[in-house]
Length: 351
Image (cartoon, rainbow, N blue to C red; front, top):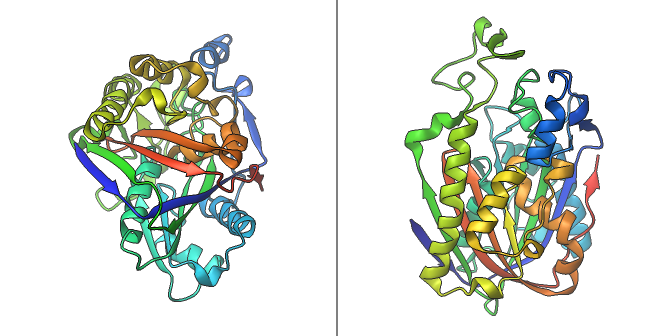
């Protein structure tokens, strides 16, 4: 596993934005009688916020960005670096980070980078941007994490449609020699990438007419080759194994007292899996917030979205020690330990 200690970086604020449109899982037409209730009972996901036609992850990130810097009182001219993490790019070319640079009216001196990733993306993005900022060349930075899984999954797939929602988030960071260090642990198992993948649409399998045709793959279920497919059992086994192991490895490597951690932010996969992870770590329920009941699994934005919606008041008013752990697409995983002190954390935005 890859361990990293990064100094001189303070997290100054976190914001999140979701679409106003809501889809109730009990109303999904692909379910037969009784199925919706069973899925809700197991996952705890009752509804998700989903984009409408023409709306993308960049729109959600734009709103989160503008709201956050307004609350911080930051001038756009002072932002030296923006890192975008997404698996829902606006275009194949150019990077959506460049598109957002224009929409956000940032100065030409702002360095923009895009990382194509999913569920572990916030931890991976936080590692990347804090590393780039740690020597002081970049004084202020924004990490944007946004995904629209509902645009990438089949509406006729019972396994993915109930789970995933759409969201965009912004995390503000500032160079500060007096800041507490941030600690990271990462790992990757690329041999099993097909546990979560989208067969068609990239350079390996370009889109053809057949890519757009629905194909039956289970009882009352259909999907196209352009839709993401997920091996639920493999992903469950992976998450249950790697997430707690990553946190324990981080704790052992850097001598972190897990009992002294105030909040554990676990990627919002599903309630049954996350509870298995929590119990394996022997963490009390009061320290593990959940947002999935209202927002589902919004990919790379799930950890900051949970922070904003479930713990925002605490982060605004207290000094908080946090463990965050993300896992999923790749297959990849990562955990982080950091401290924040009364950060800016506005209520959730909607568009």
